Length: 330
Ligand code: UDP
Ligand code: MG
Image (cartoon, rainbow, N blue to C red):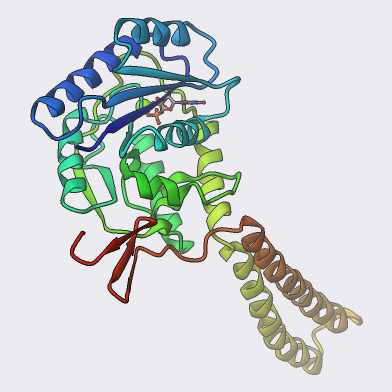
C-alpha cells in the first residue's frame, strides 16, 4: 500500500492551521479506510518562518496526532516555492506519493481521492486544475489569465489554471530534486519531468480564514520569475527588433534620398537621419547577438537534467524506477 504525504506550506496561517489540519486528517482517514493509502500516511506542515503562532500550533497538532501530523520548521521566510520544495524534499524519503496543497483550503481537498486513483492507474504527476475562478476578484482573474497567455507566448509549457495543488509520485519528486536551479517556478518545472500526467478539476473556494499572503508585488515577482527562468525569448525579440530596424533604415534611406533630391530638406538632415536609423538598428542587433550567448550560458548554468529515463528493456531484464527487475516480476 502506498504511503501518502500531504505537504502544506504555511506562512502566518494561525487562523487556518487547525481547520486545515482537521480537514486533511479527515481526508487521510477516509482514504485509509477505503484502503487507498497506507495507515502511516501523514500531513507535513512546513512553517515558512511565520511571525505568528503557526509553528506552536503545528507542534500542538503533532503532539495530539503524533503519527498523522508532522512538521518542518524553516529557519526564516523563504517564500512559497522554496517552502514547498523543502517540504517535498523532506517527504520524498518518507513516502511513496506526495500531494501539495495550500494551507488556506482554497483548493478542494475532496479531489485528493481522485488524484490518488489516477496515481494508482499509472500517473506520476496529477495536476489540480481550477474549473472556474468565480471567487477570485476580477483583477486577480484577468491578471492570472494574461499571465498564462504570456507564458505560452514565451514558449513556457504550463498547465492552464493550475497552481501548486498537485500529486507527485516519489520518482517524480526524485527527478525534480535533480533540478538544482535557485530561481524556482515549480509550475513550469513539473512539465519538464515527463512521465504520464493527468489533471483533476475543482472549483476554487474562498480562503477559510486569514488574508492572502500573495500581494500584488509578490505575484508580479512570481510572474517575472516564471518567464525569466524558463524563456530566453525576450532576448530573441530584441534581436528581431534590431533586424527589423536595419530593414526599416533601408526604407528610411529611400525616403531620405527622395526628400533630398526633391530639395525639401535642411543641409545635414539626410546623413543624420540615416545614421540614426542604421546605427540604432545595428546596436540593437549587436545587443541581441550578445544576448543570444548570454541566454545559452543561462540555460547551461542551470544544469538541468537533459533527459529522464523511464524504462529500459534489455536482455531479459527491465530497468525501472532505478531498480532492476527480471521479466515477469513487474
Ligand atoms: N506561503 C508561504 N510562504 C510565503 C507566502 C505564502 O509558505 O512567503 C504559503 C501560504 O501559507 C499558503 C500558500 O503559500 O499556504 C499560498 O498562499 P496564499 O493562499 O496566501 O496565496 P493566494 O492563494 O492568495 O495566491
Ligand atoms: Mg490561497
